[in-house]
Length: 363
View: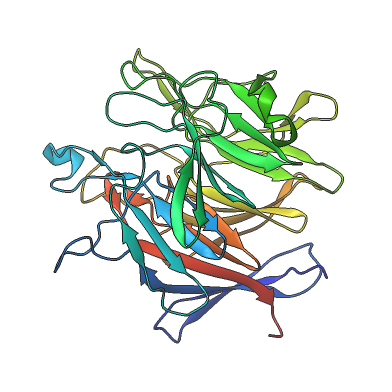
């Protein structure tokens, strides 16, 4: 059944709901939010600071969040140094309040800003970086005999990449953009594919989009419909010279003809998150303009946008009445999705895990 229309943002522990109308779609729907879950403390009497750039997704029916980075002592404008993590958090999401488990030093290294791809056998973690270098490693987090494990039986990326974006389309993983190094950082226009039915062939380079190189982009995949393919949005172009440009373009790659098409429209969603809902792409937040970090920073955008590839237009735009984090992921299980920690201002992380459910209005 197709579902459209009204999105209600419900704040946990609140009786207030805010209603937004959407145009040009068939049946009433809403998003119900549960904002009551937060990453657990790592030590007594100290709230978790949250992490940006963590790997996240589902392994079986457990949500996992692994790695990531934060500023544990001081904010970056106060001279604070970023810390990379190896911790794995895991929780069953079938209850209102998650019961978290913690495995410290789980990842092979302290890693953040890689790409997470949810597979039937586990969570595939691709690339990433630490303070000094970017990684070409690809490994799977899976569970066997009640124990979380790592599998390295995956082809490495052709080059090290962090701050790339990726999606799964017809059993093929596509990876776009990112940067190869942490010194003299530069965005790239790399575009690679890994056919999961032919893993032995490794990653294959494909033609790039007609536009700027970029990191911190947003991507989704459509397997069906009139316009299937890999969709790439926004991000930012940055060079070792100090040049930085926030990008607002969009592109679609059609694997059947091995060709890119530039989309019409304005997509100010850099470092945000997105998911596919029926025939639409739903964007959560993003960074429209780069501003210096400070306690007075207004925060990143808390806007939800719904884009229709069919009409190549935004069919809805509204305000989410809570901070929407960036440099994070959306993990999906059945009819619920989870925005997993992230940052709400430069340097400022949030430990919350937002749970959302798209449901018909009559429920």
